Each structure stands twice: as C-alpha cells, then as structure tokens.
Amino acid sequence: MKPAWFDYCVPRDLKEALHILDDAGQEGRVLAGGQSLVPMLNLRILSPAVVVDINRIEALNGLRAEKDCLTVGALVRHADLLRSADVCGGWPLLAEATRQVAHMAIRNRGTVCGSVSHNDPAAEHPSVLVTMGGTVVIAGKAGCRELRAEEFFTGTLSNALEPGEMVVELRYPRPPARTGSAFVEFARRLGDFAIAGAAATLTMRDEICDHARLTILGMGEGPFRAYAAEQTLSGRRLDPKRYKDGFAEAAAKVVADVDPAGDIHASAGYRRHLAGVLTQRALETAFARAGGQVG
Ligand SMILES: Cc1cc2nc3c(=O)[nH]c(=O)nc-3n(C[C@H](O)[C@H](O)[C@H](O)COP(=O)(O)OP(=O)(O)OC[C@H]3O[C@@H](n4cnc5c(N)ncnc54)[C@H](O)[C@@H]3O)c2cc1C
Image (cartoon, rainbow, N blue to C red; front, top):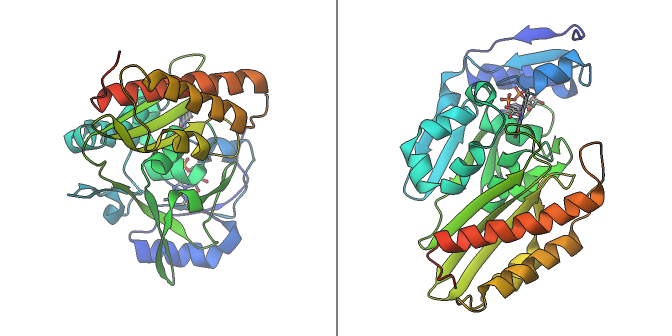
C-alpha cells in the first residue's frame, strides 16, 4: 500500500505546471484533490514518474456564474458548488448530482475537474456535463482548446487529453427557460459509488417537449447518452393523459440500448433493469419541475 517513487512538483502558476507536464510527457500526472489519484498510486494501479500538484495555482480556483454560462476552474471542489447560491439556483442538475457524490469529507477535497478527468463510469459529474451540453477547456504548452463533453470522454477511466495537457476549466451553459431537470441514482449505501444513475433535462413549450437530454451512468465506458430515448421525447406532446406513455417508451429504448457488464456489485441484467427504472424516475421528476401537468 505504498506508491512507487515519483518526483513531486508544486508549481506556482499554470505556465510552470504546463512546462513540467510537457517535460514529463506520458509520465506526468496532475494531482488535484487526490481522492482518486492517491488510492491508485498506493495500489500501484498508476506509477507516474512525476506528480504535479496544482493546489497552489490560485488562477485555477475560479467559480463564475455568468449570464449564459457557469465556469468551474480545476481547483473548485464538489463542496464549493453546493455552497454557491448561483449554482444551486441556476444549475440545479449540477447541484442535485453533486449532493450525491461520495461523503462530505471527499466532497470537501475532491474537485469537479478531477472527477471529469478521472471518468469513472459510476461518477456523477461526467454524466451531468454531457446532459447539460457542457465543454472541457484543456491547456497545453502550445495553447488552449475546448472540447464538447462527449468528445472528451473516450472510455472507462480515459479521456482525450494528450500528454502534457491538463483540464483548466469546465463550462456549463445556463439551462433554457422552462427546463426541468433531475438526477437520480441507486447506490447500496448513501455515499457509495452508484450502481446506476440517470441525468435528465426536459425543455417544455406548453405541452410540447421541445428538447430532451438523457444520460445514464454505471453502464461501463463512462457516460451513456441515450439518443434514441431523447428522440422519442423531443417534439412530443406530453399532456396529463399521455406523458407517462412517452416516458415508458423512452425507458424501454434505454433498456434496449445499454450494454452493461456484470460485476461483484450487480449483474448486467440488474444494471439494465435499473437503467430503465431510473430513466422513468428522472424523466417524471424533470417533467414536474419543468411545470408539466401531471395527471
Ligand atoms: C471513499 C470514496 C468514495 C467516492 N465516491 C464517489 C462517488 O460516489 N462519486 C464520484 O463521482 N466520485 C467518488 N469518489 C471520487 C471523488 O469524487 C474524487 O473527488 C474524484 O474522482 C477525483 O477528483 P480529485 O480532485 O480528487 O482528483 P485526483 O484524485 O487528484 O485525480 C484523479 C485523476 O484525474 C486526473 N486529474 C485531476 N485533475 C486534473 C486536471 N485538472 N487535468 C487533468 N487531469 C486531472 C489525475 O491525474 C488523476 O488521474 C470517491 C472517492 C472515495 C475515496
């Protein structure tokens, strides 16, 4: 339970951090909250030659809510989101999901960008970023680039970062008017990683669902965007008599499309079943929050 030897670097600004990461190439790893990296080092799942602790870089601390966008810097902790009235009021899906990340001690230390970079298939933040149509801002020695969330996540515990690059911020568009959202998950104990979960947003125009977005977590490979289920709902009339049929159809599409693996926590069949049940719950809650008329 001891890590292999590594060089520990504590840069004071982003330029210095990028310089060290560039020199280290494949052998460099960013240390943010350490809630996932430190266990992986101790178990020797990872043995980087250089660990770059970014915690002294003031400029990465920013949490800014603007008219159209929320910007979350690389040192913003899960708990910082929950302390922000702007986040809780303007980006309720993000706040609801963050409340379900681990325990308070971990939320106080772990960062949102760290969770997104780590891309655990059971983590809340990757699915929320995809559902909200968010983007990832990446910095390297050559400059910055911005990727859509879906381009960033490339599979279990992996992402589109090139050697020498790091995530500097996440951007979440402000949800349109008359959007309701919900994040629901199922875990064996409060604070455990979820076995499965669903993040949904519905934007309503009278009784018509203008736009639906739905992402499932816990199915392996990272966030699963349920396109077929979204298409079932987008443009559909969701009146008090018929909205439940729409949500049942969407849930059936999810059950047909996900392809989870079984593990010691749950069989593949049970995860698939949960994906359908949680989809329906998330959609019903999002619908009510969007002001939809329930029968
Ligand atoms: C007991 C326990 C329970 C947990 N339960 C949950 C849970 O229910 N849900 C959940 O989502 N998470 C859970 N976590 C993980 C936790 O949320 C972490 O905070 C999160 O996964 C990583 O954030 P971090 O800042 O600690 O990242 P670190 O541990 O510092 O880094 C994680 C990985 O991301 C990379 N990284 C970090 N920041 C950057 C960056 N800016 N740019 C590029 N790469 C970066 C690191 O190099 C490393 O590979 C749990 C952790 C523990 C210990």
